[in-house]
Length: 467
Image (cartoon, rainbow, N blue to C red; front, side):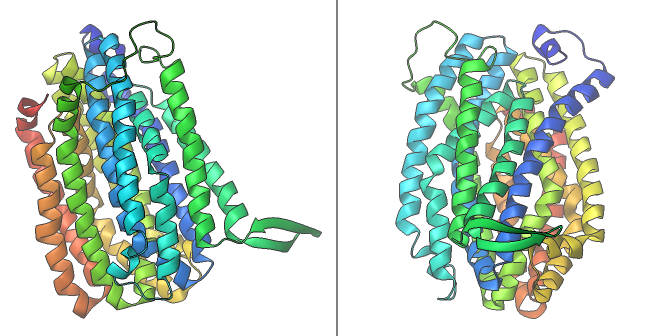
C-alpha cells in the first residue's frame, strides 16, 4: 500500500502523494456526507411536523454540538498519538494508547453527560425559546446527552481507525448509520398511517413520538454504529487489535499518555467550547427574530453542511497523512501533504458552493414545506456560498496542524475569529437586516479565518510546534 511508504522511508512522487490523498479522502468524505445526510433526514422529517417542532430542534442544536464536540476533541488527543506511533512502526505503543484511551474517554464523557442532563430542562429557556417549544427542545437535548458515553466510543473508534489509515470501515459504517437513521426515524417520528402506493392500500406502522422519536432514532443508529466501530478496531484492525495480541492489558491511563493527550485535546476542547459558545450567542441573536427565523437558521446550517462536510473528510485524511509523516520524522513530506490536502479541500468546497448557490431553494424545500422558511433559508445559503473556499482553507489546514499535535495557536485563531468578527457583526447587522445580516457576518468571518490559516500553513511554523 502507498501509505506504507511513509513508514518505510521510501520516496513518494507528487503523483503518488495526490493518489494517496485521494484514496484516504474519498472514504472520509463519504463518511462525513453520510453524517450530513443524517442531519438532513432529521431536519426533513421533523420539518414536516410543522414550524414549532423544527424550532425546538433548532434551538438546542448548537448546544448539542458543544457537548458532542467536547467529547470528540478529547478522543483526538489519543488518536494523534496513535498516528505518530504507527508512523514510527511502534504498534505496541499504539495498542497501549488505545487501551488507555477507552477508559479515559468513557469516564470523561460520563461526566459531560451528567452535566448535560442537569441543564436539559432550563437550557431552552436560557436560550430565549418560547414556552410552546421549550418542552420538546429539552427532551431532544436530554436524549442525546444521556447517550454521550456511547457516542464517544463511536468518535474514538472512527478516529483511531482513520489515523491508522483505515478509511473504508468508518466510511462504510457511517453510511450504514445513515440508513438505520432513516428506518428508525420513519418508525418513531410519525404515527401509524394509511397510504396508497401503485393501487395498493398499505398501513405504515409508527410510534408517533414526534421530536422525541427523532432523537431516539438518531441515537439508536449511532449506538449500533459505535458498537461495530469498536469491534473492528479492537478485534480486526491490523496492528491495533488489542484482542488479537497477547501482551499486558493494562487499561489504566498513564501520566505520559494523558499529558500528551491533554496537550492536543485541551486547546481543541477549549476552542470548541468557545466557538460553540459563540454559536449559541448567535442563536440568542436569532431567537428574537421569531420562530420562522429560528427554524430557517437551523435548516440552513444543516443544508450548508452539504458544502463543508467534504472539507472535514479531507481534513481527516490530512491529519492521518501528516501525522504518520511526522511520526516517521519526514517533515518535508508532512508539509507537502499539508499543501496538497488544503488545495484539494478548497477546490472541492468551491464546487459545492456553486451547487449550493444554484439549488439553495430546492434544498430548503426538502426540509420544510413552509414558504417563509424556504425563502429565508435559501437567501442565507446563497450568502454563505461565497465563503466556502476560505472556509475549506481553515478546516483542512486545521486538520494538517492537528496531525503534528499543534493545536494551541490554531485553537486561538479559530475562537478569536468567531468571537471578534462574527458575533459583533451579527449583533450589529441582525436588527436591520434580520437573518440575512447574521449570515453575512458569518460569511465575512469565514473568509477572514481562512486567510489567517493559509498564512500559518504557508509559514511552516506549525511543524515546529508538534508533539
